[in-house]
Every structure is written in C-alpha cells, then in structure tokens.
Image (cartoon, rainbow, N blue to C red; front, side, top):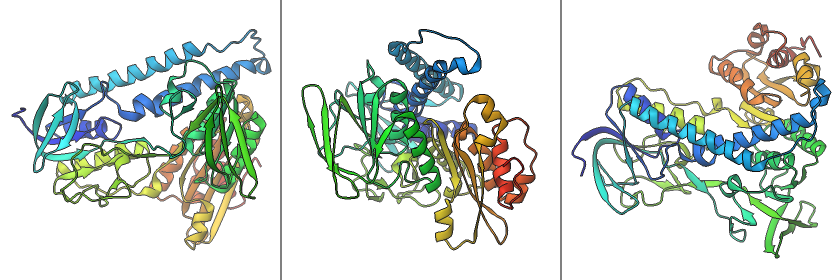
Length: 467
C-alpha cells in the first residue's frame, strides 16, 4: 500500500490525463498517474491520432511520388512497401509514448501501472495485470479513462474481414476492396488512406453528407474531391445486414430513396463511433452521475462527488484530443487554487486529415442562421492561390462566416491543402473576438497558403483581391 499522500491522482494517460498530470506538477502539486496499458499515451498516441496520421502521411507521399513528373522529377518503378509503412508507424508511436514517459520522470510524476478504481473518499486502488492491488491516498481525483470503439449490433468485428479502427491500424496487407461504414473523421480518413494505397473503396453514411457535422458546402466539396479520386460513397443509406463468405463481406440496406443497396468487399471497416470507457472505475454508489454513457460534469469538469473531476472522452464534450488536454489544464488550475476559466466549446477546432484536409472552428453558416444572426459569408478558392498552384494542390476553399451588425467572426471552414494547420489562426481570431475586417487587414506573407484565410475574410465585404 502506497503511504504517500498525493494532491491529485489522474486515472488514464491519454492526451487529457498526461497533460493534466504535467500541468499539475508545474503548479507545484504532487501528482500520481494511473495507466492500465503497458505504454503511456492512451488511444490518441497508441491507436488513434498518431498512428492514423502516420499512415496518412505515407499515403500522401506515395501519391505525390506517382505525380513527381508534373514537377520535373522523373521517378520510375514506385512501389508501396506496406510492411515498411507499418514499421515506420510503430517507430513513431513508440517514440511518442517514450516521450510521455520521459515527461513523467522530468516532472516527478509517480506512475502506477494497473487499472484504477475509485475508493472514496480520497483513495484510488490500482490492480496490476498480475492481480496485485495497491492503494493511493489522494486529495483529488481526475477521471481521464478515454473511450473505446462502440460495438454495433449485427456488425460485430472479428479483426479479420470485419474490422474497427483499432484493427485496421495493424493490417499486414492492403485489402483489394474496402467498404467503410460511417463517414465521420475516422471513416473518411481511413478511406483516404486505403484508396491511395490501392484498395477499391466505398463509404456508406446514414446522414445526407460525408463529414455530416461540417458546413454543408465543405461536405459537398469533399464529395466532389472523393469522386475525382475514385472513392465511391452512398450517403443517406442505412445498412441493415452483414454476412460473410469465404473471402468477402456483403452488406445490404436501403438508401434515402428506399432502393436496395448491396455492397461486397474483401473487408468491412465499422467506423461509427466510440463510447466512454468507464469499466471497473467503481462509479456505482457514488454521487457521480452517468447519463447516456458519459460522466456528467459542470463547466469546470467537476462531477457530483467533491474533489472528483472528469475530462476528455468520458464526458459529453466533443471527442477530441486537444479539447481533453485543455480540460485537464482547466482542472489542475482549479485544484492549485488558480483562476480557471471555462472552455468556450465554440472555439474548439475540428480537423479531419483526409485528402484534401478539412478543418473548422466556430459556427457553420446554417447554425449561425438558425441562431438568428444576419449572416455574411466570404469565400476564397485555393485555385486562385499562387502557393496552392506551386504545390499542385488547388482543390478546395476557405469560407468565413460573420455577422452583419458588428462584423464579428462566427466561424471559419477550410477544405484544401494544410487546412488542419491553417485553422489555428482562425482559432486565434475567434478567441480574440476579431471582426472579419480585422482578419482581412492582417498582413499575411506571400506566397503562402494562409493568404486564402485573409482573402476569404476580405470577401465578407466584397474586397477579395485575387478572385
């Protein structure tokens, strides 16, 4: 039994948990971190953001090499060495995880390996893989146990022909054909990867568009781009049944018109959501409320139990690594007695790393109108950007949503090259309550992709220069 008294114990070492632990240590708190996985980093580092983006990078380079002649570079016999792609992915994941281990040591955070369970008041028990249990004495507890793939009845995964987002990261070979169930970020990213690797790829989505939560014009542009790349999709389609043959998976359902849909492929990826991981936490009998599978918290991430907080994928905020990190920082600043400001969820950027990339922050045009704003929109296409032409990536556009009365920026939506990087400057503008005019008057370097944001902002007032 650990006899030390900790100021705070964090359960889970994902981007919410490990960032919270570091900020707590920076603020002078004595911090313990509990992790049941052999490696630190959680889903994001081990089975999510990092490995997925590495596969996307390999797919991007493979595609670029095939068009090298367009840039005056002659390359022949370009081959995909998929085993080497997977080796690089594993190297990057391992390096990131070891980096987190180093940060724990550097910040003098005590790491306990095992499954954490609340033993209120003021205790967390940790059970290791071999069944040994120790108890941590702690003043505060942060639940940061993340999420797991949500199982879908009738579409059970076996890791062979029917896979989820964890399984598809570990494939030994590229499937000849792939059906992707779900067109959120996970679905379109993996479709983008494996289509470029040579799989005949089809996406099926229940809602009317790919990336249905994005601005409708952005979704329509992505659909246009995917068609051009040979990625097929069926939106407004409900899959009802799955069956396996010796060497394929067959899915059937109906589209929005009521017509029968039948698709057959070597592999089915079920990419329709995740759920909070609360198993074995010992929440039963506590004042912590769980509704619709998530821990209920206030705007400061406080649960119904005194000194117990929850952050990241276990609470009903968007399932995003960067949001989990900020929630962890918010919690630690409260525990350390600092002034803590609740997070404005409207300012949380959303990024999808498919090709072309999609990123957004703030309100969509439709949402702004629904809230009663007199909406003004400015747009600028990458086809009119000198730098996009240089890159040979001219698809997509930047869309700025503002309101007429005060010219306040309400949202920025981007599809095109480096969209997931460009969105940061839009986030800063929203955070600082900029107007469209102020963003348009900001001097952006030329030639850069980022100029498209400035020109779209100028477009709100009909003052775009290059289009």
